Image (cartoon, rainbow, N blue to C red; front, top):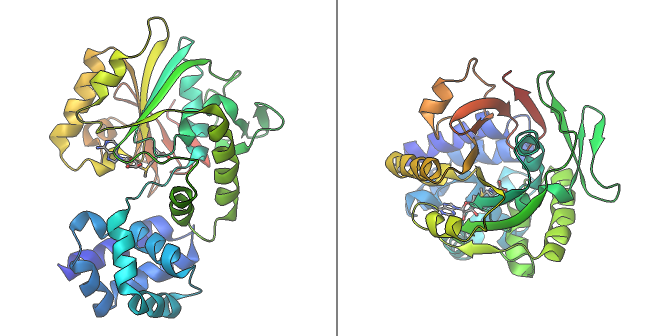
Length: 317
Ligand SMILES: C[S@@+](CC[C@H](N)C(=O)[O-])C[C@H]1O[C@@H](n2cnc3c(N)ncnc32)[C@H](O)[C@@H]1O
């Protein structure tokens, strides 16, 4: 058991943190080699043994550590509080920068759109038309809006206009209220500490979403999506999207049933996930993506490799 957890933390260090967060790489490697910490994690349910969840819980309870020794001392010093924080929360990182890789797809659909996000967290990705974007210097959106920079390869259809969204709703097992300071503190703890630009845009996006009154309903995407689609008024193109969410649905049959529902309801399905989530779709990509990349797919067809936080898009052409 502890060897499996150690491998999970090593994989996180090497594939996810390296090159993005020196601190998280060091923490994950430290945990992978520490018998006491691995034993503590082994006492938790498997879905509570994730690196992001552990690191965010320690930061919420003890503050941001400077290095692995101080992380270890803080965690062992307040183990009961950290475990309580882990058990009380989920990985709900809400990254509005992901809108920059969704936009080239959204802008090309027949407008207006009815937008449904499953796994919406606080709903920050449900207001893509309210942000500004910069694709290789081509700018789009209001001058006062938070700007998401995205490096796009040549074939990427750079959007000429923002999408027109006339109806929107989110679905989440645990909706996060952008008006609740404790819930927002948890989402901030999930943002990696050496990425201050992500924290700044998260706060700017949260301000916007508070003014838009985005509705995120409590529910499970594997059972409650059909009822939400039923509420969409006639007229707009129905779009169901998800980003960094289907990985949390462990049963491949449940993921397949979700995809079938979207096909039956004639909704446009936009998936932005790690390639292992829908291996059949990933197998159809004409070339492999870089380590750690997400695969963007529309109605089951791969269209681009993307940075998990929206910093670049590599359109498949
Ligand atoms: C990592 S967050 C991603 C949030 C958002 N999609 C984004 O890209 O910023 C994953 C979200 O999916 C939600 N989630 C996980 N499993 C779910 C399910 N079966 N049904 C609905 N939501 C789910 C979690 O509660 C969490 O808020």
